[in-house]
Image 1 (spheres, rainbow, N blue to C red):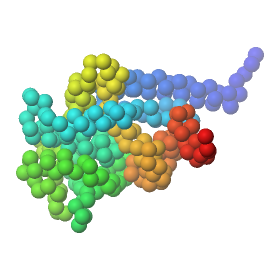
Image 2 (image 1 turned 90 degrees about the vertical axis):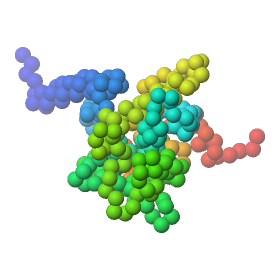
Image 3 (image 1 turned 30 degrees about the vertical axis):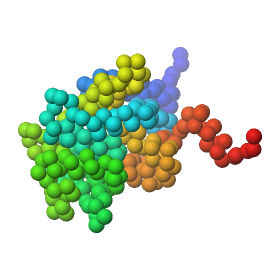
Image 4 (image 1 turned 180 degrees about the vertical axis):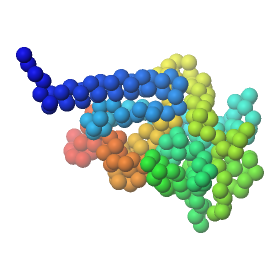
Length: 272
């Protein structure tokens, strides 16, 4: 009779745990994609350490899709939406699009008075958020997103630039002081839906992508813009994104074959 050794029992136990985690995580992924959950509480849980080292972000919008969404956000409001709510939606879009923040990081924390914005002498904005592990993070906001944020503040009776002493939510709700995570998520999804609606009927691929997209797709796009498109050093990108490990940030540097060929060709030019 074969008797399992303690090592074999441990291996079998670890394999069973990995399979169970994978099943649970798959369920949470499906719920998240279907919109039943605003965030995936099991993200990064499956397959343990091995998955963490091989993870590759795949939920991206193309540059053309993002450009289209930006144009929609800068354009006219839907006819059934009050102007102030359209300005609020544009402000929320600007923060997720150009801040690279996680969904919950824009939710108001009364005790910590976060997130909040600091404005320097040149009227440049820095967004301060509370990230995973209760870690504080400072994110410089690019000038391209400031007009939408200032327009929203004017619309709700606040000065264009937040004064140093201001301790108010960045985004307000109609019924309460601050808009929560589900409300923030719904506003981004509504802009994606509007952008999909304003596409030509034949552009089915982009329409499908926009129908699936969420706030986290914008975070992935922000990271990819930094790391791949503009070659921002990984430690800098890690700090901006609030990743605990630089390996997570490095995952965005993995490129497709076409991009890899372009890098190689550009590194070793030759005469034709």
